[in-house]
Image: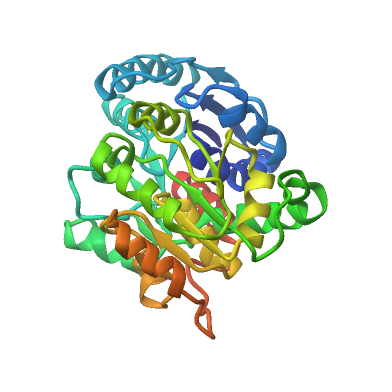
Length: 353
């Protein structure tokens, strides 16, 4: 079996790693990196730490407007697919790389599989929502992380090729968490103590592209007394600089970090503040309370169990949540058992016969 896997951003590198390891044991995988995230801190370090092989094709698209970036990716992905002639095209998540891969495969009538299918925020103003909806509607094999995701697809009339496999990020986290405790010294480098700091991440356009919203979130950080470690995405740093924001002494803005360092910080935080879908799940799996800096979440089960609170961008609400949140006594299993990658590969093989 010959599979072209398309990735381009940090969350996709994480999701692809466990699937890639299994695929390459018995099959041919051609890894395509669109270049959506391209510097070493956002890309290269993830390949090294996750034992992800160097991509066979690096398209070098880089940043740009949604239309320009997606158009460049679509053109270059199409060229790769025409040359490689795969049995399957495999896409992940909800980025512009996902959309470009989906459209290129669909227009060439190549079988398309979507890992993390069926997620919905029901907010069409999010570019991620548009990407995932379109990808799902042109995919042949829809690999869902949860039953809720499968039900979302059924509500849109998609019932063929739908399988609940669990979340491949759980597979990746099991691999990384073991390494992080022994191979990461990030706590020592930053001088922080376990459970005595908060971890914050902000990167989504709904946060960075709206100065008032971003300003309200940063104001909440300033009002907290605890240390906040805040690895800053390049797009977020540009937006913060545009606000002229000068953080309070306890708010530490640092450069992007590798996956093992990030997992170590997540494991040891008292609370995580994020607009990232992946980190909401990782917080849950690691048993760390999470406050989601958005108005909705695709990962509704984490909220229903009480481990995640959707706080939006209201300064007072964020501060109140930071001061009061505690993890519940129980944490039921969500999103599979760490064997999602194996199920994905088995389905690709079975549907290829």
